[in-house]
Every structure is written in C-alpha cells, then in structure tokens.
Image (tube, rainbow, N blue to C red; front, side, top):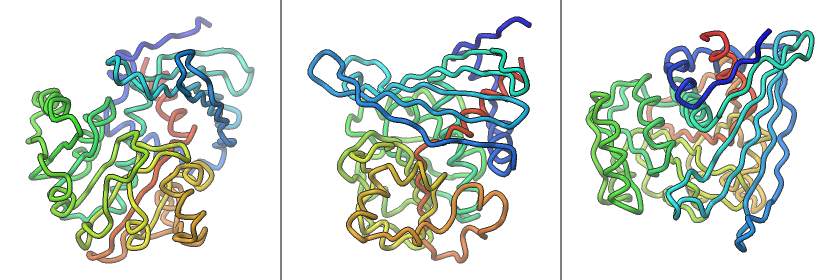
Length: 313
C-alpha cells in the first residue's frame, strides 16, 4: 500500500469545519483512544534564542497510531515565518505499517480552532452575538471561522498589537462573508464581548478578568508552555474553568501559574473536553456564568484531524 503524503493545502481542503468538529467530538469519547503525555524539549536556535520541540503521540487501539512533531520558534514572527511548525506521521494500528505523513501547520491551526468550537458549543451562551479574537497569527482567522461555524455572530473583532497585521486578518476573512473589523481598544472590546478567543504567544496577560462581562466565554488557546500567559489571575478567580485535558493544560502558564500560587486548586478544573462532549459535565449552568476554556492541544485532536484527512483522500 502506497504511503500517502498531504501538504498543508491538502489538509485545508480535507478538513471542513463541521466534519472536523464532529471528528474531534467522536475521538474524545472513544474508549479505544489513548494519548500519552507529550514531551517538550528546549532547543537553542543557534542565534542566542531558545526554541521548543514537542512530540505528541496518540492512537486508537487496533486502528491507527499517530505522532506529531512540533517546533515553536518565537523569534520567527520578526522574519515573517510561522512561530509554530509541525508534521504528523500515521501508522496502521494493526500492523504498524506507515500509512501517511502530512505537513501539519494548517492541521494544527484548524484542529486547535475546531477544539475550541467543540468547547464553545457547550460553554458559550446560545445568544452570544459579539466575538473578539485576540491575536493576528495563523490561528486568528481559523478561530474566527471555527467559532462562527457554531454561533451566529453579529459583530466580530480582531485585535493585535500591530494594527496592520490585524487588518490583514480581516482582509483574509473578507471572502468568507463574515462581518469582521479591527479592534482599536482591547480593553473596551473585552468588556463588550460575549466570546473571546485568545490565540497569542503572550508571556504577560492580555485579558483582565475585571473587564469580563457576566455570561462571557473566554477561550485561551495560544499558550502551551509554563512561561506563556494570556489571561490574568482574576480571570481564573471569576471563571468556571475547563480544559482540553488536565495533563496538557496544567503545563501551560494560564493554569500552571495560578495553581502554583493557590489561585486555582486542581478541583477548580471542573471538566475536560471529553467530560463536556460525553455530557458528564453539563457545561454552562446559567446565563451569567463566566466560563473559561484552556486548551494546550492534545494528540487526540491531531489524530482526529489526520485520520479524517486520510479517510477523505
């Protein structure tokens, strides 16, 4: 059997939002699905900076095995290069034979955004009308599209430190038919938003908990290391906190730092994505509840996306 190879363009065409969201929901509650802990290594970039190299394995017993290798080079943004780059290998779960390989830059952004949509289906208010995306990287337009796939937003804003880059995201989304504009004032947009999706590599909090309106849903999906932080401690004090997986999310600064300082306890992590999808936790419990979803990315999301691409080929 020939080994299949998928480019980023192939992956984008093979992963429409509805099907990808459903694929992630299915694998998160599959009792045969396994995702061992990821490993993270610090790798010098040869220019005096530190980069990260992650390995994320997962499998569905007797069906398929996958491993994603990810690099995070934070200085790449200054060179107009992606800060996160990745590839995935897929193997037959019965024989161990190599089935396929794919570039995973687009896979990573799409599955990350889709996982947020899976959570938002259960945590964002049904009448949410104002969406704010914080960040201007490759994940920003994906977050807009994924959230818009599960709620009808009347107003969508994109905020970035660089207004020109925020405008570029808006222009990229113009063909989608969504009404998207640039936010000129982050704090004002945070206070007005019903749903906020943070997709940055920030190491200092951008979202202040004191500004969140009752009923707001906050999606934190940019940070995945201890040093990265998108929301302050007040967010965690005010919000009901959910995670994609406890093991992965607990390594990220938005969860690890508040846990370390006692702002959060392990019991404050109310449910993971599997609990939400399976209905073991009801999700949002009342209209004024502030909900927080912290995603650091699990290998099962990558496997769900890659498996879907393989099936669609």
